[in-house]
Image 1 (cartoon, rainbow, N blue to C red):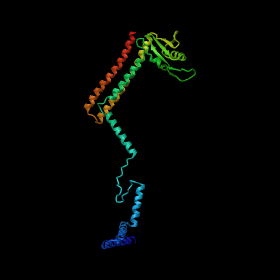
Image 2: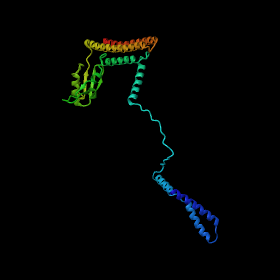
Image 3: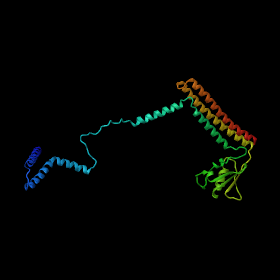
Image 4: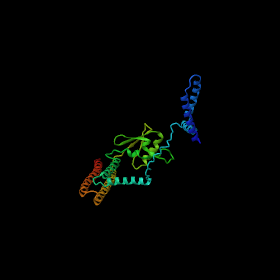
Length: 298
């Protein structure tokens, strides 16, 4: 019905326009003709109802949501779905790659870093143990600073002596302890007396915050005890070096057995391993001999 109405109005407007152009009156009738022309122009510019409603509705929608225009001729682009990787599978891949890298490093027959680290740790530990011993009558103040002290009476909480006082060596035969608070002087003196250092602290007559500790000269028994302790520390360090060498030797055997390295590479690595191990053992023995000779001269 709308279609028929549209066509009839279309042809009617063209007919009116044709008649107006043919007649072309002049004089008073020209004003009437002008009004008819306005009417014809309105008819010609008139749009169908369905078209006006649709465009007005689209214009209203666009006004409410500017910038949002949906084109019905275009369809959304469909992308390929990403492949989902399971979390467990990715973790397993990372662990596998980590193991592969570790195995590659450990199976390198020329990599002797593990042996060098083991020897360095053994030598450092022996040096630390020897430094705690008495050499040439000089007492190591670290032994006093590491003593545990109970500052409060009746309390089980203990702290290091070095946190409550300052230990200062005064020559080779005297050590002074400077206490921060006077109430800590007695607990510190008790901790020193009850230790196995065989020391007898005495309060300074002119300063209540100072404790004087005379260091007794080394005796034959004390020297022998010091040498015995140093020898035990040396043997422990030598044992650590032998264990590190054994681990490296076994790794080289596995490398040759599994054909990871050639026999020539394994042979060169073994020669280098023996040189490093011998050098470490010699360094350990030299530390012990230096201490023993120093004690014998006293």
